[in-house]
Amino acid sequence: MVKIEWDIKLGFQDVLIRPKRSQMRSRKDVDLVRTYRFLHSDRVWTGVPVVAANMDTTGTFEMARAFAQQKCMVAVHKHYTLEQWAEFVNTEEKNNNAEIFNYVAVSSGTSNADFDKISQILSRHKQLSFICLDIANGYSEHFAEYIKRVRTAFPKHIIMAGNVVTQEMTEQLLLSGADIVKVGIGPGSVCTTRKKTGVGYPQLSAVLECADAAHGLGGLIVSDGGCTMPGDFGKAFGGGSDFVMAGGMFSGYDESGGDLIVCPSTGKQYKQFYGMSSEVAMQKHSGGVANYRASEGKAVLVPYKGNVTDGCLMTLLGGIRSTCTYVGAKSLKELSKRTTFIRVQQHHNIVFGDEKSEPSPMINQTQKDKEKNKTAAQQTASTSTSNDPNLPIFDPSKSYGNLGQALLGFLNQKSNGGNGNDGGGGSDAAMDYFNAMPPAMKKEYFEFVYQKEQQKLQTQQQGVKK
Image (cartoon, rainbow, N blue to C red):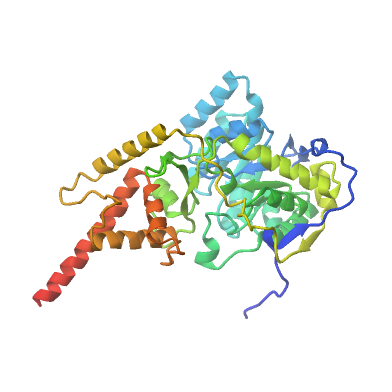
């Protein structure tokens, strides 16, 4: 029989933290460093429990170097090769930077190949003590068995595993051998699981409930996803999360993976960011989307924002310190004990824009640099479509009749999430979307629409003959 739970579940946007009397004189007096002893490995770790997610574009070695300087963690994505891991470890040791290994987790899926790979990495590099076992659906019995397998093979390593959102599975993963349970299904900025499957759980309620279950067994949790601003980290910690993981907030920086894309018409710079269950990710790592599933992620272009330390980390850590001062918490450890959430209908004032979604200022460029980038991009775009002599080279200033309209219509649909609504931006928004693409992507879009128009023309001609 179908059941409905009538209790209201809350996300970060549904609440604010009520301020309390405080003896704190300055934010600089707040201690964000935590020390944890883990349930199974019995290891002790000390650091700032902020984690960059194990995604291609955030879980990079470059990000690990930047985060380690602030004693923060990075779950390194699983697609680095054994040789790349060896180069990273050797380089850091030569630079007398062995401390970085305290803030790096080796990520893995649940296949036999994944197990073999992490076994080789961890056997070759004894300095690495964190393992991140990551699958979208942590509710399968197979996942619990895989955690047991990894725990047996690596009894002294710290295992972070997930994702789940309910108490009973938090307990199950801890009993299977996890030290830290990853909490979150569908809250991420480039995750479409909730849209594709209808499955999920508001993130703050998931944190509150799973933290209660984990702490009862001596385990820990990491809130994974749903943070759109520094205040959300404070809410996650206030709700009982021991670590907080994010992806989108750390995208678009020098340390983020992916190429730097220059819009030829404006000179603005972007970086690509995509979910690990998106079509882009599966095409890159698995040869495409299998015919028995759908992609559950999307790809976006994020404005380039410079280096992650100055552009994000310092602001983020400052925000968490400020959260602590507002409730009188002298340390991050005290925050959850002093947090009271209040439900709200309006979260913050956006009369002059919403800071969390506004792109950071682009890096300074002279007009000469912009013209140079524009010319180079146009030349590359022109040569990239020259393979087919019958294919016209796309020029935004020309209409191309039906073909131009078809391309704009297709781009409007893509730039608005596939809903066919141009959101008032019309062709200008579509062309901004097109111009920000790298040449190879432009070529694919233009040829796709060109072929569709040719097929439509042939169909019309056959209809006339009949």
